[in-house]
Image 1: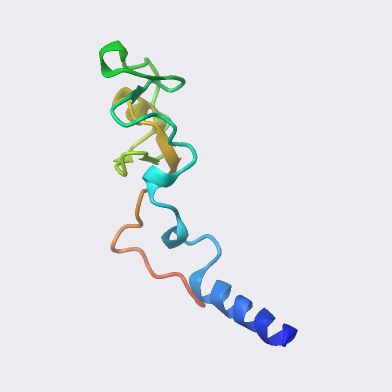
Image 2: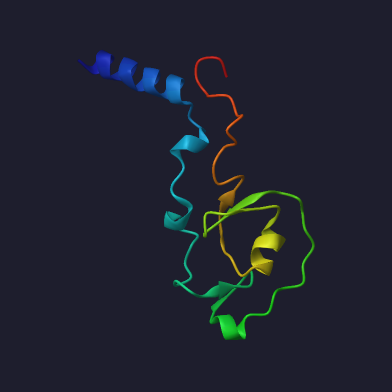
Length: 104
């Protein structure tokens, strides 16, 4: 019985792909999203919209997914809009992205 479970687990990971973005959480459920609804984030602190001032920063060109489920060109762009970062990369893979599976 032990061996058959090992095979099932292997087949599932081989088919889905361990790093597949399809397995990611909904961005709003990320542990990184700690601001309460309606609050803004300046890169270090959650605050009321009236207190928010966009930070001065330089774009690093690394795309991120914001806690609002929107893609941003960089963390600087997200913070400039008052949005926390859920994770690096696009919120959802582009429709043209190939499916991950045995051929990756």
